[in-house]
Image (cartoon, rainbow, N blue to C red; front, top):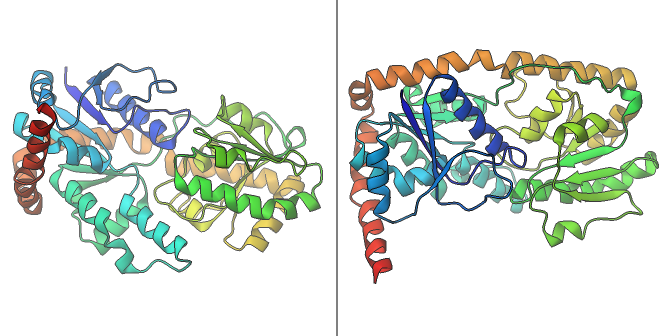
Length: 400
């Protein structure tokens, strides 16, 4: 039996984060291909994590070397570029023939560029992309044998703008196994909803935007409420709660499916970010139309009609939210659009076999694959002579 070792930045929380859901989908793909799975992490987020077998590791500690040698995996999956920085050189030293894969989740340098432009109230320029995170993230991508890219926009950016070889990349979005149409009709639903893990800055900024525009929606639909859900709700989020205005902060969602099957419209005026938005993917699955921004819908629907509206103007966003909430025919069409997007863009069988075939192909031709990636060999050499000795120095310091 082949063996996959996942090095997780955190323990997956699929009920709380899109990243957690994504990681569990990848683990399932390997499990279905009869891989033994071992999950290693230095994280301690146990309470709401998925029930998987966890083995703890330490950063900057030589105990990892013996552990990874004993595990002797066929494939290593790094959870984002940060874990490759921390453990990649140790993996290469102790298991030189393992296939190294990064799940980027989203491109962190792109998210940072957009964050900076958002804070400075301007559009993103090309030079914003070439930030410190860009240097680190691209280096990690080049050091690995394959990087998983969740967004076609980000895949095209890497290939066309930054000339990363397509041989090193694999586009694989969220995966939908079965589309089951919601049985809760328009007339049985009520209220608006927003959801998002509050450790993620774009989600906090989304709620601040909703706080600004909600009173104008409430004025037009007095009976409506806006229910705000999200894990890791901080005090600053709780302080936005206002019963009189119908702006209700609910905290962690126990069941997204139940909440989405009761709500009428999802509001997601996402101001910046990268990758795919799990809340929008889930809204399609549970038959909940939405109004979002162009950043929110980026790379999620190809040229298909959106399951609601995509608007960046506050004034138009408000009008479309009201229109979608009140017009049953429009709402039903938006719901149907969501099911069509799931079937055309996210269906699991579009990606599962080709992904595992790609992993097998690299494994069987690993030496040639790495020979073609000469920049990766250069960066691997650099990392083994910089990151390695910094880590060794920290080890010795900790012993003292």
